[in-house]
Image: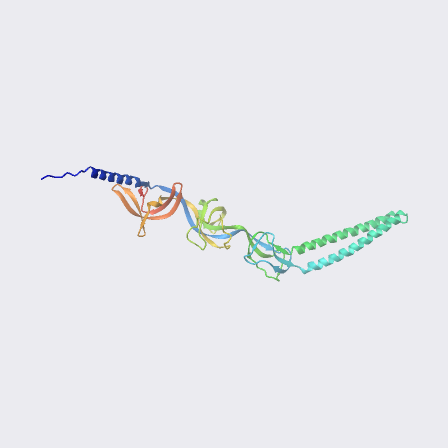
Length: 339
């Protein structure tokens, strides 16, 4: 019986090529990440209240009757804008009296000037004495000064009437208008309250965190509406003032945040502020796979690769790229297999 021999060279070469490619693919895809602790900010979530840098009342400068109010709650005003007008009828009567007095003094002064001119003419002819001329000159000067004094008094009254305009002390938004048209107000009484100078967030933290908070720290601000998630893209801020006095066991902190102009004064927003440092274990996000709602990480052990379930936390931006905090499941020194 004769046996037929088949050429094995091509098959052997194909098998060797396949094994070589498999080994090459395994060496390319196999990468390890050694778990090491990193230090990050320990963030504490607190509520911050929107406040204005300046809270100033627009006050009446004279007493009288409030005849008009040109603003209401929520109105936007600029510095120096008239927000109300206070009128005092007695000032108008004083002005009329001063005008009448000025007219009378002006007429007397004109008559004194004519008398002085006639006296100087008689003195030139030797018909009057020098003493009489000096008397007429003094009389004219006194009346002239009385006219000037009355005009100055009139200017004062005009200024008082002008001060009946209640001006906004700064640019901003009207928070309250406690007075109504027709009310009788006294000098210094507040007609409207203006919030100006920009907005900021005021935080109150327990005093145990006071030693760890400093000016310049970055804070994360939540979305509007008491959201429980930080709004990193649109609103972040920094600590601009840490008050040296504790109030009711709390340290008061001011944080400057952009894009707060449309918020209500006193509106609360959730803020994350660093209060300490902590060590965490974190891995690249691509090392985590999710199946059926459970997160897994593959690590290399002495017996080979092993897949373990983990609990991921927040994603952290580091100088080596993003890292996902692992709350449970891995230890320091574990070798994590990356895809």
